[in-house]
Image 1: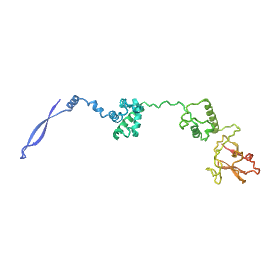
Image 2: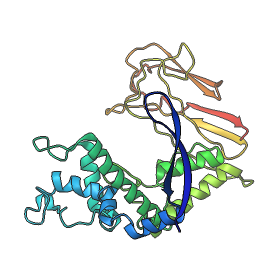
Image 3: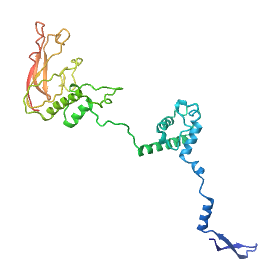
Image 4: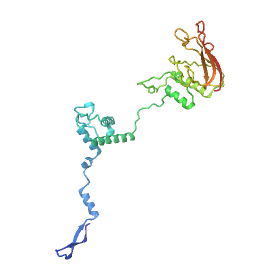
Length: 320
């Protein structure tokens, strides 16, 4: 409904400064009339809204810079972007992931072809990445995952160390793992019976080391040093003033008296390596950095050193 309001406006007439009052009537529309006029004009056209939408902007960039090569006729790189729906990237996620990688790294369009502006490139990437991320978050698909996965040797050794504070040598307890592409933890899904037996045997040995045993039994362990371990220089962790030797960590399962037997390295002829001089050498045995035995080794007069290391034994009392 239209109402007529009267507004007063002062207007100066003539050049002599005589003031007169002129009453002017102006029609004023109410909000109801404005609403009726807006309804009559109708809502904004859908085409105008689509013209500025991210999907239509992405389609414009693709049609101008990409579809020239990647169309249904040329099929360059087996990629056709002229018929694919850019408004719904989730429907062809693999294709759009490739497009995102190429556009993000700047490899597409090629350097010798027209290039989109940085704003167009950023807008295209923003639309595709946002749509793909939203679709992935709504329906995550991690692929097929194994219900159970065994640990490889390195992981098993680290787990025992972290849980039981035991430093074990998993290579002496378990067989090597199959490797693929330089990794040994990618083919550990299966657990055949023979390998399961090795894991059970390893667990039994480790549990005895962890909690000990009240039963007394004779056990032995041979520790072999690398053949290329240098014996000419002072080694890290060994006492100052010494040369060569070795440092070995061993876990004692229980309190008791242990015998340490030392065998010297020999060459292909069966002779002790390093005894080229007639002078004597001292061999020092330490346990937790405390000396427990000292041996003197020298080349025998008859040059037969077959039995030179038969008496290199030390008995020590150990508290586990």
